[in-house]
Amino acid sequence: MSKLHISTIINGEPEEFLCEPEETMLDVLRDRLSLTGSKEGCGSGDCGACSITVDGSLICSCLMLAAESEGKKIETIEGMSDGETLHPLQQKFLEEAALQCGICTPGMLVAAKALLDENPDPTETEVRFWLAGNLCRCTGYDKIVRAVLDTAQEIREIK
Amino acid sequence: MSDIQYLAPTTLDEAVSAYSGAKGSAHILAGGTDLLVQMRSGMVNPGLIVDIKKIEEITSVKETEDGVFVVGASVSGMELANNSNFGKTWPGVLEALNLIGSTQIQGRASLGGNLCNGSPAGDSVPALIAAEALLTVQGPNGRREIPVKEVPVSPGKTSLADNEIAVSFSFPSRPAGSADAYLRMIPRTEMDIAVVGCGVSLTIEENTCTRACVGLGAVAPKVLEVEGAAEALIGSQLDEDTIENAAEACRACCNPIDDKRGTIYYRTKVSGVLLKRAVAIAAKRAKGV
Image (cartoon, rainbow over all chains, first blue to last red; front, side, top):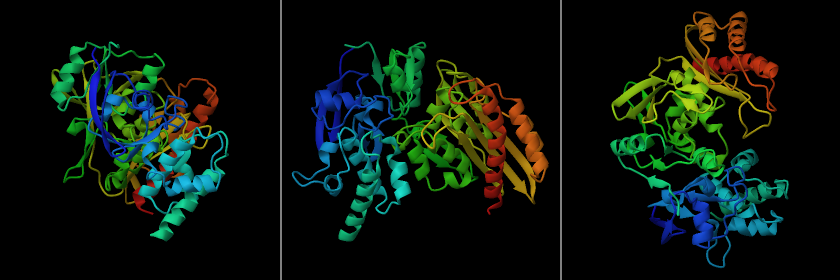
């Protein structure tokens, strides 16, 4: 079989690539497009380290074929900051030390941003449920949850 | 170079012709939350992947004027939750679908995929059976409608022919005083496979249960409809003895596996417990209290 030619939009920029039919979106992001911010933890949709959004919907990129991205809008961790200016969530994760080894952090940030885009004022319970698909073996989650809640409050105050 | 072919047809006819033409080596891709895991582990090696998410009928939710909902087989949990009316009429089906996996999985996982994956522990299946939902499938010889309870056959196997594609679920219109509920038991608080899952749908008119249907999952090689439980509930005022009889009907039809998640004894006992609790929730919703 010949490779598939896919046209998509990644972090606001039109992108074209060739891929094998069975290649996952995560493999294409990392190995063909050098967008290595999305991590592979489990490869089976359990850990959330490969979280991206597709047309605004949060998914695991390891459970999506790259071919499915034809005509879609993909957002990855690489599109989160505005150049050198970090997204408020990224800034707060740094300030409050909401990470240790860092492998889960891109997925946590992408998932947390998807939450705040949908619900600017989540409760702690809502944050914990929303992020239940993002596993972290270092922090014990408390600092992550607090950083998300503090960011939400900060964004609300600015607005 | 791989031997796999990927197609994303925009019409159902194209999808059926490609799928049936592959003579069993094709797999349908809806949300992919089962298929991609199975491909990665080598459990399945498709010759052809037919992505059905560009087909409008399979990806949309419709509500007719007489209150029938038609939900496309690949509509994701998140999309169905965002439909403003479906969850008001079918809260049990929605809560069952929304229990599957994480937020990320909800962005992709669908009723059609959960049913056609054929797991005896699929969370949405007992709720679909309790709702008396019908599955529309299309093959080379046209369409047919199957009650969802007739779809599961054994672990990983359904009654769909290998050239038929699940298109949509239709949920019957129902009188006022109707509601459903789904509960499952898992060893942790979230994101696990059901040890027992129980879906109950009720209609209550003037304090009497006039219609009932019960689906029970993870306690047999396939998800079951428990007719004995429904028979016990119908005509009653849902008093304690009645509900105990319905619970006994659930326990009596259990034929579960014994594994690390739950023993035979535990799964059997819990099936009765969940029946009672799910009846209580459905009844409360039906009465609007």
